[in-house]
Amino acid sequence: MIQIIKKILLGIWIAIVISLAYYISQHQWLLEPKNLLGFFQSFGSLELIVYILASFVRGLILLPSLPLVLVGILFFPDNPHLVFAISMIGIVFSGILIYRFSDVMGFDEMFAEHTHSKKVTQVIEKYGFYAILLWSFAPIVPTDLICYVAGTVRYHFWRFVLALTMGEWLIVGIIVYGGREMMSMIGL
Image (cartoon, rainbow, N blue to C red; front, side, top):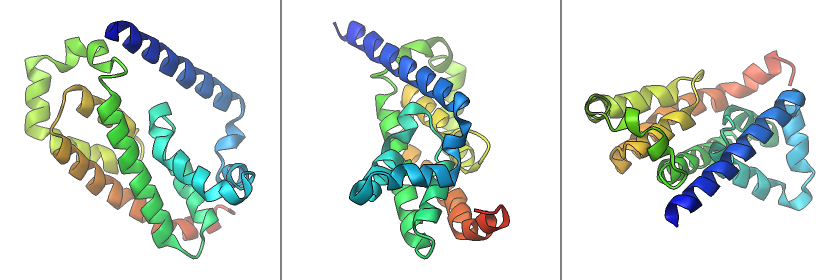
């Protein structure tokens, strides 16, 4: 019964991700910070709550955090500390959700032949903290992917959280505190 539920959840998740990816590919303008800001503002008095919720669950549907961080900069141009806090809490919470749900969604079974091999397990045990830290800091790779892998191989939870937080702390800090200048240079 549990296997059937896992397969159904995985199927629903894959359908949502594919549908969303297709929709966004047809409407790429949606990911532009000004357009995302307009989307959140359309919720009126609930705009901040919707923004925070989106920051918390965006990783489950493989949306990058960068557009939401940039929206936060537009939302609160004079309060980078609030943007940083919402972004960090959202990214870490989303990472924890991904880590915890990797087995529920069936990723442990999907990647079993790769992740449960002795070599991969040894590499993760030996270099896992640094791999997660560097992966989280690198702006060109999806952090959510390393969260799925860490959850699938059942890497030590608190080490995972610490490495994720430290890596994201650096990159989000650079984006938030340097974001106003960057956004003014590109005309936002």
